Length: 100
Image (cartoon, rainbow, N blue to C red; front, top):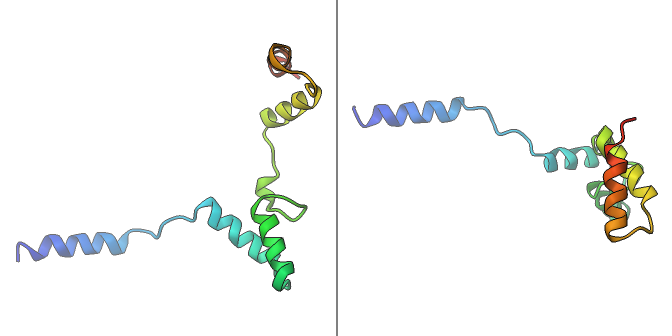
C-alpha cells in the first residue's frame, strides 16, 4: 500500500497537468496551413515554404508587426547604406539615440 500510494499520486498529477502549450513554430504552421487551403502540389509546397520563412504578402500577421525600436533600426540602416567601419558605427549610435 505504501508503494502504490506515491505511484497513484504521481499518475493523478500527470493526468491533471495541462497539455503543453504550442510552440511558435507550431502556431505558424497552423496559420500557414489554414491560408494554404485550396492549394495543392507544387503550388502548396512553394506557398508553405514562403509562409513558414515569413516571406511574402500572406505570411502570418504576427510576424509583420515591428516594435518602435525595430522600425527605428530599419530607418537608420536605410540611411547608413554605403557607410562602413567607424563612420557607420558613429552614425548608427547617433541615429538610434535620437528621440522622435
